[in-house]
Image (cartoon, rainbow, N blue to C red; front, side, top):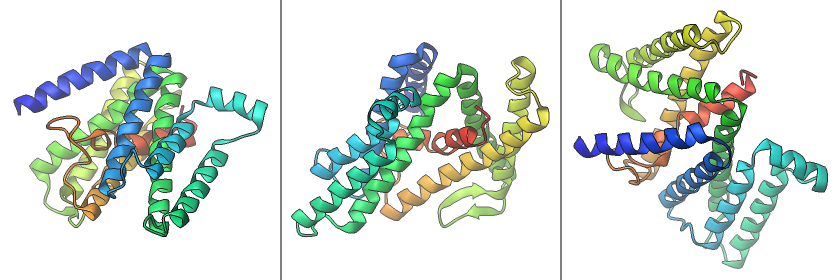
Length: 263
């Protein structure tokens, strides 16, 4: 427990420092986080990060991470889009599968392609949200934190009906609902202190949807880990698992907020 607390305080302090600084330092931090997250996913599939497929995966992920300001200029000058980089990466991976006589299979190609999309675009929106305004990223972090905390404590106190025992045995329906309620309450408190939406109804609806998506992001990562027989995605953060364990909810919440034009 002591190690868990120390790790949480140190990692939290570092992340908040970069969060407040923003700009290039925060972008570089996100690139580092995404690289570790991809490493964790590939390790589950027994694909080495410093192999040819691993390096191609990193390159595609880094291209997907590019901020919109950079890709807009790139599109104007070269007409290349992120989809082009992803497609080229997939083609090269398919060629590699032939060169190694199917020791690296079509399934492996699909795994890396989906992993780069999941990690690359998920963390891309972490950069975009910070560039859009510190208050929006704080809002997203509060939604995720309040949802996780509410789901844990309410589920522990009142939980009786299992949510998805095959995927995450400890999660309950009561905890799921409690997480949503906690997120809405904290969002309303933030709205009273620092308004981020012109409509209370919009804020509440967005909070409910974001809380649900955040919990689904957590369940998705749990399903991936269960499928590959691992307890945590990594051990970078002692007592807290890996980078994916800590950012799985945000990877679902942040794209949603942009899709709904809340940011």
